[in-house]
Image 1 (cartoon, rainbow, N blue to C red):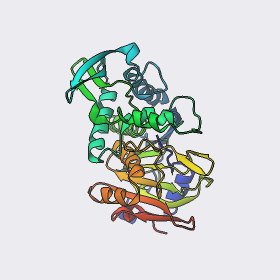
Image 2 (cartoon, helix red, strand yellow):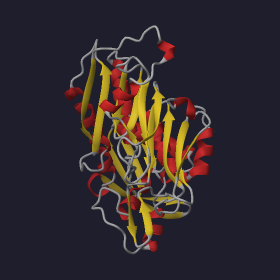
Image 3 (tube, rainbow, N blue to C red):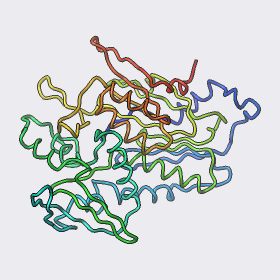
Image 4 (tube, rainbow, N blue to C red):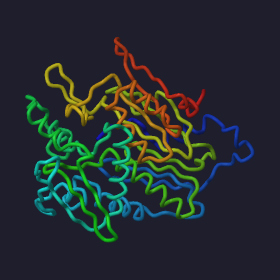
Length: 368
């Protein structure tokens, strides 16, 4: 549930990577000639893959079939997807009554065929939910729909029903769910009306999955990008580290308005921000990042954040969590993890954008 501001543009990346030689590889500077580019549509956005295909040639059909399979598991826009079935207990589940804290409560129990894509996303989401003290929470789906940013018809809220928001909070929270997996089936038990949404983690997962697929084919040099979520391996066509443009988080900024050019390889990077996906009611601005603790859109001093991590699924989810935490808390969170780095965008009282970094992020910034 976010708008990303890492941009991969094939021509720009080639232009950028040609402007600086990597001195660490001065004895191996001949460009790789056979680079293949595959692009398409997926998950409501675009994907781009650039790969050294000198030994293995990929077909677009292979890539598309993988992405279709992932969508059939994780897309809330596909009625027959696994996650949509989890969100439709009236069709695919049953109602049960359980004793909780001395009171009987109604739950939904959904039993489905085992789905490894769903399981991996659920388990990673639960892990980051716990590590982030609940700032990342895929059960905010009903609230996201209520505020007009979900898969239901989008509309601005003209009058807030505070009682309804409070009611939704009673069944929000991954700690309220129980998930069991077996060799052939999986069972989800959740509060009645609770829903899941993995859109803030699924693109990162798909990037990692495609990266693992390419590595399994014996490919060592490639870049995978879906909707701004990026994973790189090895070297680019110019036999240098991959260069990723980090665009300025302004509402009307041009696509080539980069705040920094990052020199990244063997890493993933993902971003989140509120600066474009929002609406106004009077003078009040409502962004699409919903705080799972308050039930309201979170609009703090943090305009956007980009997270570098060993894998894209974590970078994706943690970037969302940071937007809910705000600047100070998210910076402290990033500093607590050795393998995470981040770039933060905030604004001062005059509306000027300020860019700041975690302690190790500047190593990725390409110096002029």
